[in-house]
Length: 353
Image (cartoon, rainbow, N blue to C red; front, side):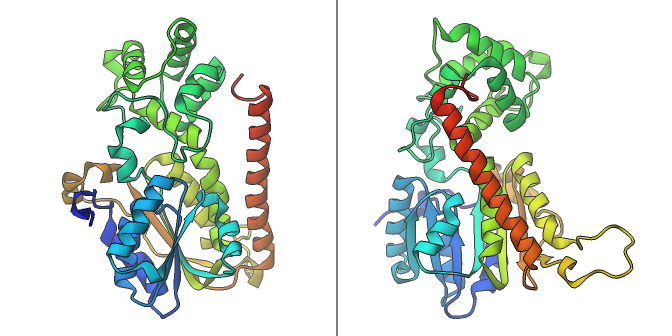
């Protein structure tokens, strides 16, 4: 049996359980863990809700196999359904299982313990490894390909938008200048390049390349696009008093989650309107006051928790038809955009130019 005590404890685990478990406390409750990882959250959810069933989605086949074994070892196999998929395939997953409504949808947008500790993936700037960064190792796009094939303008955009890197332009310029003679293939090479570009007087705390690594990971895995099209799918599949709970680890993720949740937390009418129509009433109730953050004790025990933002909402009334149409359009538009980007990338006309 695997020694699971060696696996990192999930960030804000107790707080996540407190938000998710009440929604699935009745027998037959269904919770979807869209980011199963090594099942740290999932095992805690099932332990806290003995009548619940959990659907665990992960695009990383290795992590999914380890999580499934962990569920067996914990005695939860009969209450667990593993699914190898990306989390933006949520609707397809539920349709395939003939499930219309679920009681809770959970997402932890951070890297899993497996991805952090497995040097061969190249997620961490702390170890020298190939620049891979794929959560799903069956996909073709890697961080090495991004650095070798994307144009200078697109690299700059990625570093600026996804990493909020203030030196995105000179870093992108230096990558393009060097790559013909010395392609970037390892995290050590990328670390050294960024170290040589970012001025000593303007460096953030920690490794100066951390924002570039973050941006590459988001680009390789399409994380923000997937998040934007998963949230409306989650809302459309919620049962009455169902909950959506999301842990984010950087401002772009948290902004996406906050913007989405706010659509259902406030009346959809102009300010000052004396009567709010029924189909414009809020349909979400906030479960957190703003975003929950880790306290000093939690950060000391687990430094990864310093950047976490935890938000949750509960469905308090049926989503009005016009909002359901809007949510459906949000998912469709995101899928259409993703398909268009894939086509552009394939024919060389898109962002890899």
